[in-house]
Image (cartoon, rainbow, N blue to C red; front, side, top):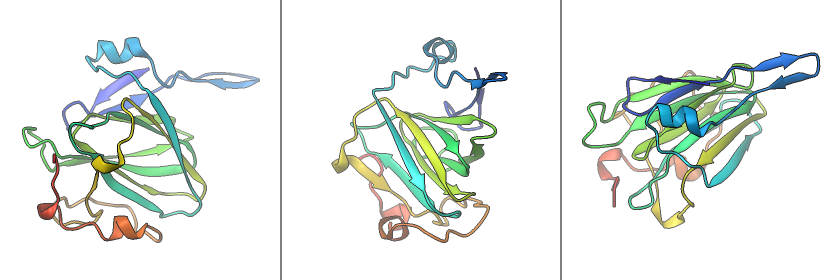
Length: 181
């Protein structure tokens, strides 16, 4: 397992090293030692999946407000997605910057997002399934979001969404969203 730091502090692309033989393959998808070597304190307490029927389904941009911030390791286990991390940490040198990566079952890469970084993705294939390892219990009252196409971020999505929830479509402009409260 290799962790590659992106231009966003503490946001990593995670590369696995598959072991394949005639039976199929084996991949380590999370390793406490690898994360500790990268100085990441991450101990998942929850695992979730998101199934997506259609290509160009958009989910996000989401985060959990303090004191219920979450760290996530996100991986696409079927199909492919365009995965986006958006830095909402006001003290970060990359505040309001974003990083995107194509995650797919084929490339078996993941994206690690620390607290204070919003997450969203656009499916590139029908039947995309996304797996999350999360280090904190979910608190619905702490759920926050920002609109995927807010000009404050300038995210370069590879296609227009064909499906998204009313909630994700109707998030207000970022300037009106309480990030940490």
